[in-house]
Image 1 (spheres, rainbow, N blue to C red):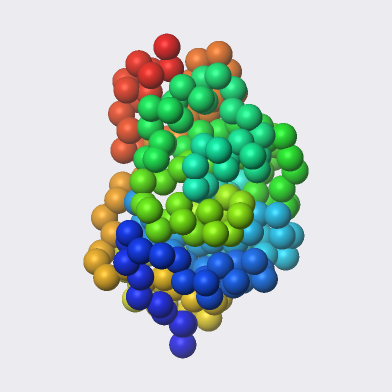
Image 2 (tube, one colour):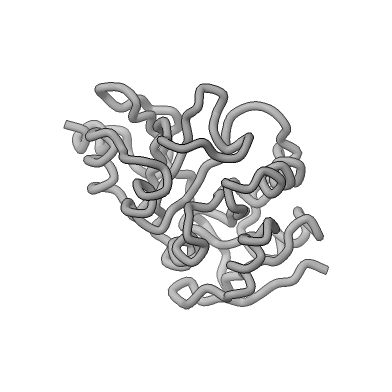
Length: 207
């Protein structure tokens, strides 16, 4: 049976969850959208296990979340000026940016073109988990590819089973909509996926 730990969205992160991530296990946790699956993106076997759990062997990279803009830039390298403007406006919040990091991560985190997607979520516990891990963590949704993403701890356990070492379980149902994904590698932002943040707001903030 999947180990589930009740958590307060504004509370502290159980050390057990941090230890699990650092040893290469998969941890499910609540975000400001739905439940995410966390591994350390620097660990090859942890990322490979996550992709097996997701039944996702090919294709694009895996989204990361971070504790802060400072953690993003310390771990992955500086954002371009466009990314800085968007981060200052929308982080913490449901805006994911795509850029080319200054470091190499485990196979499968970066997209085939070398880019990575990252955001700083509005969910306090998710930020604290990334902070305690000492590095941005993965945030791919808690479901096998093609299944409906989990919105409760029970759904995570049913969908993922023993593939997840533990679930940080928030008492309520998560109802967040997907984040807006923006490519910030060019002179102007490029919309990759519609989401919570309206595109016209992104364009206004990019100026």
